[in-house]
Image (cartoon, rainbow, N blue to C red; front, side):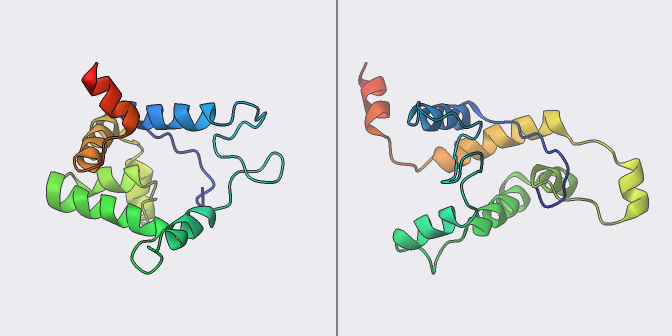
Length: 138
């Protein structure tokens, strides 16, 4: 974290499934990281996602930071949640020192609901994976 402070993130069930699958795809890893880097004990480089987007031909159309921007826009235009809530979800700090001194919540319970809604929004047009089709057929 750039702010050098802890930021707890409430994860939707779908997000947990994705993380569990990522961990399972590398069972021999002794790393504490779900996405370990090439150097032992280091995370995946922050440039890796940028490279993936570029390799997919999306380098000029999408950026990792754009995902955060899309979330913030969705919060404002679709859900119309309070700005404080979307800012907390993005781990943004309150720049006004007096306001920050009094507003000490992280809105964790509200962010749980918000992140479930975001997961549903993101999945609404997502292609169904082969595993998902098998589950649906069962």
